[in-house]
Amino acid sequence: MDDLQIPKEQVIPLNDVADGVRGLRLIFVNVFAITHLDDSWTLIDAALPFTASLIRNWVEKNFNRPPNAIVLTHGHFDHVSAAGELAHEWNVPIFAHVMEFPYLTGVAEYPAPNVDVGGAGLMSLFSPFYPRGPVNLGDRLRELPAEGSAVSALAQLPGWQVLHTPGHTPGHVSFFRPEDRALLVGDAFCTTKPESFFEVALVQQPELHGPPSYFTSDWEQAGRSLRRLSELDPRIVIPGHGRPLAGDSVAEALQRLAAEFGPLAVPENPENAA
Image (cartoon, rainbow, N blue to C red):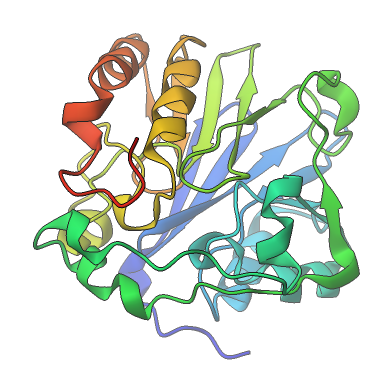
């Protein structure tokens, strides 16, 4: 497929995110590559529609081989859309949590967005026009290991723990590397205000915010997931939206967001808040 017409200034490499981790920002969403000791690597998420060639070009410039797998934090359109095309070209599997399978096998589409939650934010106002699926990844799709499995259960992602962090979607997952306390969070929370197009696509001032509110399906679960992530005391946060953050203040900021999740993150009129 042809490229989405993204200005060059909105295709931004994210280098030196963490040891063996680099990323690519495509307008307002990030994909990440995690390199392993054997020189293999894994692609986390697969961005927007029509971005496969942009991801492919980035891969060709930075790696001497295709990834060992594509691993999805969840199946929303801005995290999955290039997955099928790239997996077919590279002949690799696509891993996701089993609770995302209805949305990745052509069975179901995600609930309609709650357009009222973002106030005047353009990302919220445009949300009814975003694709909701279902997509069908066919026989490329594989289940991520169930929680409680050994860290090495997902051979394609050694050293990282797979954490089921539902709330934004039923099968949303995050990934944690205890060695350096790096936490890759998908949309469990963001480091920019996801409802505002100006902040998401242009300013990108890093600060912690809750998950994108217009597409978050269960706020009670989202709060529990955020509290769980805060207990990991991460030093590096690697988000699906916004800039990665690192340093001793990251854990404190995440704990504050978790403790005040209701007033700081939950909208006044959520359709799915408990």
